[in-house]
Amino acid sequence: MHALVSSYTSLTGRADRLSALIVPTLARLVFAAVLLVYYWNSAGLKTDGSIFSPSAGAFGQIFPHAAEAVLYDVSQLNIFQRLVIFAGTVAEYVLPALILVGLLTRLAALGTIGFIWVQTIVDVTGHGVKLGSLFDNAIGLVDQRVMWTFLLLVLVFKGAGPLSLDALARRATAPAAA
Image 1 (tube, rainbow, N blue to C red):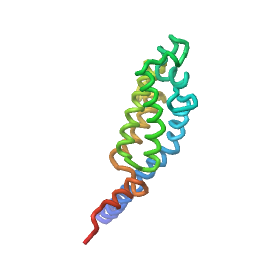
Image 2 (tube, rainbow, N blue to C red; image 1 turned 90 degrees about the vertical axis):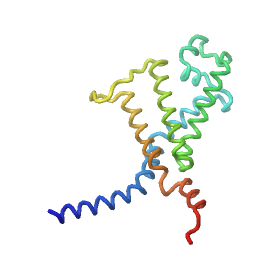
Image 3 (cartoon, rainbow, N blue to C red; image 1 turned 120 degrees about the vertical axis):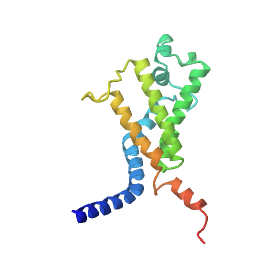
Image 4 (cartoon, rainbow, N blue to C red; image 1 turned 180 degrees about the horizontal axis):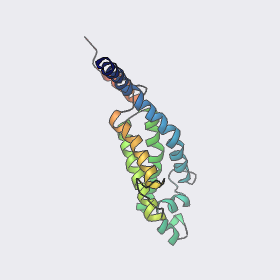
């Protein structure tokens, strides 16, 4: 019995050491496969030829009640609405790109988590999407957004992994061994 426990402990110890290398890199790969294009496509829909020209779609997506009240006329956007749309568009381009290359990954993942939950609040309060609930045997909005958040929390806690610009920067700034 002791040999079995010892073998198991040795094997799990190796898996733990490997997970520090593999898990963050796989988390970034899964993010790229599942959410990168989603966010970049969403950002592209928010502009009308320029990142400084918000589209009617962005107006309706982010401020649905206000957009509907003025028939989606983007000339009716106030400065706050323009800034929010601009910031959201930049976030949808920049945060996924940072995660993809592994640069400032922990901050980018935190920013994306914040973005996800603001997006969720808008979906529920502005568009009437049902939030759903956890542990109810149905896949709802909350289930999806919790999974996305968990994926990003892996990056917040583990970092970007060895194949990243964060790791490259860390190696470049590490003191030389004597």
